[in-house]
Length: 230
Ligand code: SAH
Image (cartoon, rainbow, N blue to C red; front, top):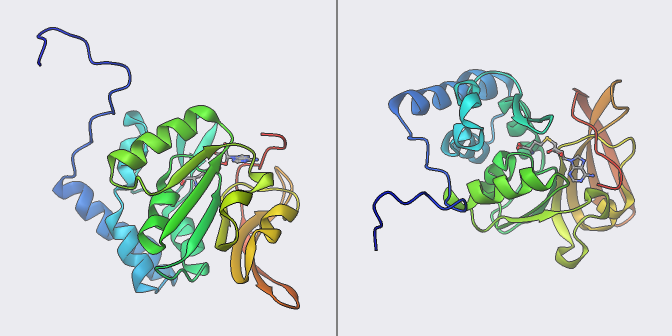
């Protein structure tokens, strides 16, 4: 029944920001000029980055920045990573369609949507409740309802859903959290920025072998800190 003049209930999902020729073109250009040109070649990752409507994961006042070559503020003092960084980290995980992935730091949900294009199941943990709720709403609205979002402390990982083929951390702890290594399968990959809050952080790519952990330092980065006891 339609009641004229009634207010929208608070729980109504936000209306979709329309996809236009401009957003499609901006995204294709982002993939070409910011990502492929810098060396990310994995066709599945390029396709995923071309498909996920990045602007839909931003607050309305920030959408004009969606396809810029940098991080974008998502409120609560947090940011959505630069498109190149999202693509690079996704490619580093070498995801296969059947893989199960854990993300720490849901933020806007954008990275989780990209992962959902590449893997079978995505579990993502966010410490800020307001962000987790918004990301979950946006993911559902955009057809990524398969992504499971939890409010919690990423240092604990998600033991009930472990082990994972891949783990991606989008905030920087000072050291690699033990629980996350434990929850990685043998043969699994983890991409994680590690380092002090305002100092030099390094992006690490870890691979778990039967005999132990192989660590590669990939590049210098700057992420928001991974908060303790979140
Ligand atoms: N992947 C996000 C970017 C997130 S920024 C995106 O695509 O938009 C990093 C996020 O990590 C922030 O939202 C921050 O609140 C969250 N975070 C920080 N410490 C955390 C912790 N201990 N556990 C879970 N999330 C944490």
